[in-house]
Length: 302
Image 1 (cartoon, one colour):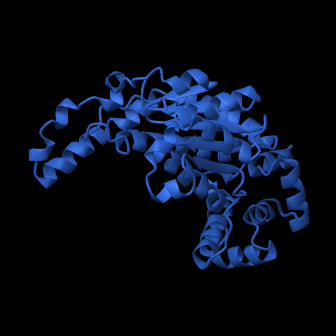
Image 2 (cartoon, helix red, strand yellow):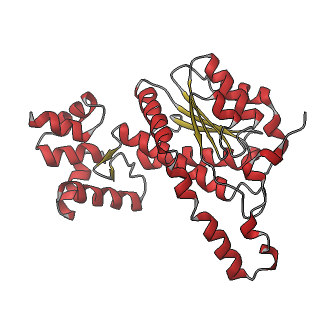
Image 3 (spheres, helix red, strand yellow):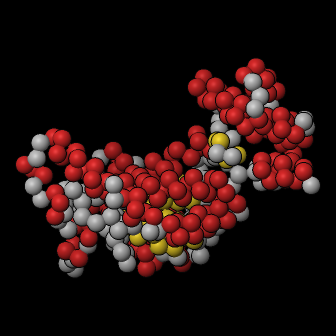
């Protein structure tokens, strides 16, 4: 079956960069920058759908589910990148947010372009990690048509998992499969068809919103501070002290004491300082309030 690339906006020639091969270096980077300026505005048009997917993710994860990204090539790598950043940033298990890429681990480092056409692998990869109805599967494909991704979304729907899609064309094929479709129309690339550029940037921006928004909804942030940080090295230990100082107004010496007293539990340390309660009391109340400091403090004020 012929793939009609001429109908995909991501495959069109960009009229503003037709002479890029004759530009000097400054003109090249300026042309790229001019195109990149358009991306945030394109993402803005999809904010309602992105928020809808954040709500779905927060609800499913609060009930024991996971976020599972699936993609091929650049899209797959971006999903893996976003997933890998969640444990150190928010202190979650590396199983909570996962990325799957067509062609397996080798495809992260070495391009395996033919793997994107393997529909069976798109299903088997999800089965291999025991996909269940509590989970959220988010398919990424700049073109909106990758068979590996489409098959995975269809399988996820068949077992009542929640499904979302992120593409860079309007009315995408994967968007017609997903319960929540995010179609960020980024337009023609600087270099025709090189969707690692504008399309990749747009997908990364959307992924940032989804994972960050979900973690905020799950109580991983207090004010705008990363309070579930895992202080596993010298830099992160210092950052945890700074977070304590910003969250409570205490000085550095007090922050050091709180970190030690709480066994490096930043959330509990903040609660101890703001409430005057013991470590055990704070940890108990945090558990009762889903780890949400704001909710805990609100309960104490009643």
